[in-house]
Image (tube, rainbow, N blue to C red; front, side):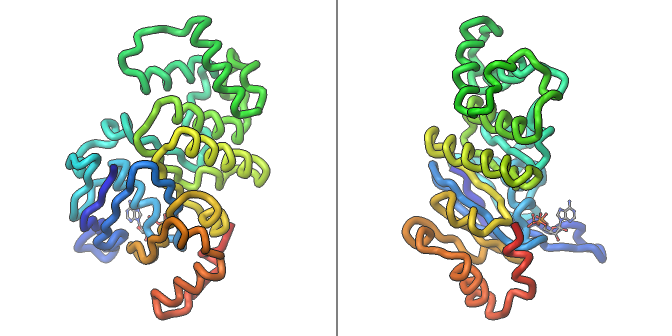
Amino acid sequence: MIELKNVSMLFNPGTVNENLAISTINLKVKEGDFITVIGSNGAGKSTLFNLVAGTIIPSQGTILANDRDITREPEYRRARYIGRIFQNPLLGTASNMSLEDNMMITYRKGFKWLKRSLNNKMREFFRAELVQLEMGLEDRMKENLAMFSGGQRQALTLLMMVLSKPELILLDEHTAALDPKNAEIVLELTNKFIREYNLTSMMITHNMSHAIEFGNRLLMMDKGEIIFDVEGDAKRELTVEKLIEKFHEIRHASFGDDKALLSP
Ligand SMILES: Nc1ncnc2c1ncn2[C@@H]1O[C@H](COP(=O)(O)OP(=O)(O)OP(=O)(O)O)[C@@H](O)[C@H]1O
């Protein structure tokens, strides 16, 4: 699917602010992978997502999508096959448009051949999809999204992304701005959709328990490097304690501030 070969990102080269945010990373995301990404503040997690999404171009290295070189492909083109959800629940949907219009726009994105406009058949289809969220939104399809809560909007962003059938989903701490109850609901929905639709996805989280509980593969980042990449049985056997131990073992040092790695 997506592959990074010797990718580095050097910000502000040749200045006092020079910063090697990503240091010669090699990563192969396989089809169907659900990868959780952890690491302390400034480890390079969002920069890694920015590189994959095309928000920034690497200083060095190559990025491939299904063996095609996309290193310099602009973000808007990659958005056709890479979906991304951010912390801010207002970013993924249009506030001044109705729920059904928002869904129609996203649905067209997934089926570019579709010339059909919003009709009762489509509405029935959307209604059935919305039922899956168990939030009663199927009865509010004509309301503007400005009327919806952050949790509802993030759940909708997620559902709409699934409908647009991306090849890869990037979840950038997408539950961090929600209250704990809504965060749990959105996370469970995320897991359900990823499993049911067998979506290839990467999810940044500061919650180590979530990183262990969800997904088939876990990446630990530190100082711009992927220092631990674990999957399958080895991942299932992980605990938070083992993960911290692993960090100390790899870095031969105490993690100065384990709290940063462990914070919810
Ligand atoms: N556009 C930029 N220009 C300059 N430096 C940047 C830029 N974006 C990120 N950085 C730097 O790159 C490093 C990695 O940042 P990044 O946001 O990827 O970390 P992170 O692991 O996502 O951290 P957090 O958990 O705090 O979000 C940091 O030192 C950051 O200051």
